[in-house]
Structure formats: C-alpha cells, structure tokens
Image (cartoon, rainbow, N blue to C red):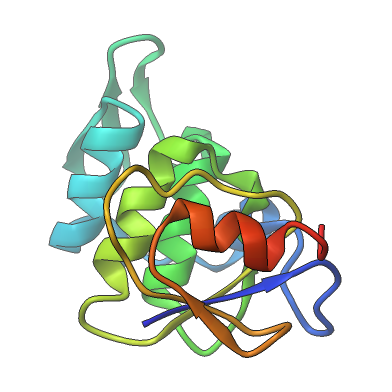
Length: 145
C-alpha cells in the first residue's frame, strides 16, 4: 500500500537529489524497475552503469537524471527511509502506485499529487484514512497541505 504523510515529517529525506548522488551504487542502474522508470519519466535509456542516453542531453551519468526519477529510485532502493516525493512531478505518481502493489511504500508530500482518474488505495497517515480515488484524496488531504 502507498502511505502518504502530508506536511513536515520528522526524519524524512527532504532532498532526495543529494541523497541519490551520495548513496547510489552501480547495482541501482542495473535494476529493471529503475530502468523502466528512467525510460518513462526521463525518456532516457540506461546503456550501462555509468552511461544513460538522454534524448535532450546526450550521454549522461546517473547524477544528471531528473530529481523526480532520482526520488523514485531512492524510494525503490532504500524502502526503510521516507523520501520527500514533492520533488516528483505528477508523471511519477503511477510509479509510486506501481511500487506499492508489491510492498508498503511510505512517502512525504508537501503538495497534492495527481494520482489520476482511476481507483487506488492511498493511506493518508495524518488522519489514518484510506483514499480510493482523487476525490477522496482531495477531501482527506485538502486541510493538511
């Protein structure tokens, strides 16, 4: 399930970009889910551990990935930490939901992310309620942000 805490969350990693740059290992770039997220979010292809082909920037290192995809990778690879997912755009929402299908994922948000028109289950930790669609999420989170 996807667990979301809106607002200040003690112990959250508020700058996942810096965390990623100082923590990632070579194995992170060979993980299949990470490759899929990089391809979808950044429209880039992992060639090998140190080379990613970006249609905009050409050959780049993992440190030059977008903040959104770096945050997703951190959430996937370091599940024991809570990351500020407000560094992600709405194009990352589907990946948060996807990851939460196979494991509990807890994130911190400082804005209301758009999780789309479909149904989902998001546990809002602030008020211990579960939202099943965007209308419910807006109602549960609206006063918290």
